[in-house]
Image 1 (cartoon, helix red, strand yellow):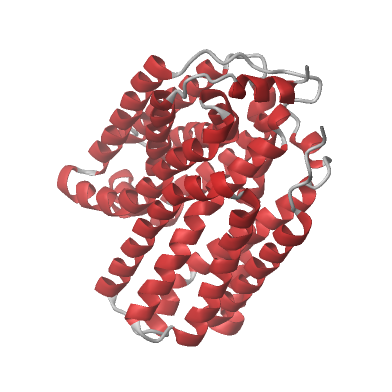
Image 2 (tube, helix red, strand yellow):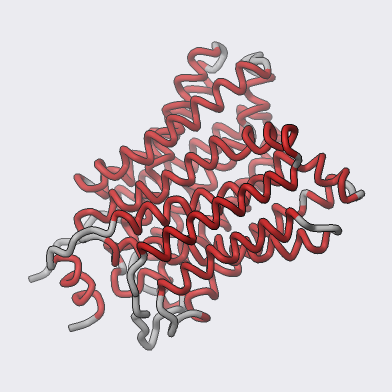
Length: 398
């Protein structure tokens, strides 16, 4: 029996889903994403306290993203012989250590060290997330488990910036990072209590994302992933200039619209579990299609705040299903090496963020926010067509 059949057989034996472990991972995700974005809302007081410039302090975010990309590529190879339970617990320890290093830093170098640890944890955790979900719940419940895990991202995205800024003024930026460390401690305790032993499933090709990339259809799928995430991040990066300059929306209206986006994104993440259990291919195709149509609709109709709020909320709901959908696709397409596939997926997303930001900036200089939205829509619609044509599910051979 090969590893794919072994995993399928394991998932089909009727074992009880380990929901406690799933929710412990969700809390860990919340802690990781919250820590990742806290410096953005605390940049000024951090820079002032350390006596350095804001631009240099802002590199704390850049360092984390760069290390996360590297971690996604090498983490499976480095940990291939270690029980996955211990690997995941180690990432939670890194989360705690990172926040404490930042909280008690007396100079910027300690903050950078802490952010490197956080990048290792983020890249490694996302690489293992889909493969871990496969081992915690039966196959039919994997989309639901992934939607719960990714809901931690949505909640952190909504909460990290405003709460970080608010509590930074109330209790000081150092205490905010101590609170973030406390979240990591809670996640670690819960994970110790709930995560089962998960022996590594090593093979001759496991842990090599470049080997996985050579599999039939994977390059096309990664092309679609890059288009979807590039289109999203280019759109989202220049959403504020569009709302302010085209729609004439003030700060209060902007905050309300972004909150609506976050809430809709959370709802879409939870809804994704149900949709993916019914039709994975259709969900993967429809999400970029809806997002592309929303971008074009904003260009044509985005002059009224209520219309903007509705279209952006629909965009957020559609995007909420994207990470869950592609993680589910990963577990069904390469169940024999989902860890390496997870590393490839994380690397593709990080590349897409870089491409989206760079291309979006160039287009913005030429055609403004409307030009970015049109280009974003084009990328998303090409992704939808690619998914529809090239990623149709193949008939299962007896």
